[in-house]
Length: 165
Image 1 (tube, rainbow, N blue to C red):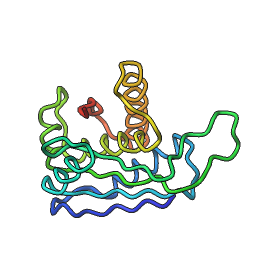
Image 2 (cartoon, rainbow, N blue to C red):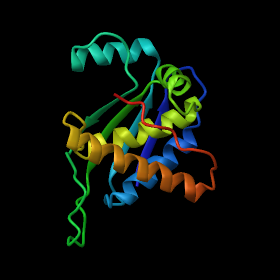
Image 3 (cartoon, rainbow, N blue to C red):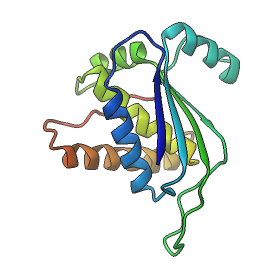
């Protein structure tokens, strides 16, 4: 799996954890090991510009996903998943910090960025949360991936509650 993490935010983030949880999520979703993903960490000004340009919404947001080859998880009976460019995930640590402190189970910026990375991966794979049934599926899968990764890493304490909108 080729995953690039590029921190342009000026904020120190745990890039290795972002890389690790992205790799874990893609493996869990059975995405081809030669697929490519880019994660970009930006400041609030850059995120606000992207949010306005692509969503026509004011202010910065927490995570945005820009799919490339529109890869999807393979069906259970498929032996070989398709390979390609997944796309870009853009994260904003300043928004992540705010969300982490305001969440019912308060958590760190890095924990929120890990959650947002999984959220972004799922969006790249075609998951959405516009409808209640879609939201239940996506957020359930997101929690299972984050919990599985945290258990594998031996991390203790409650997993971050979903704070993404």
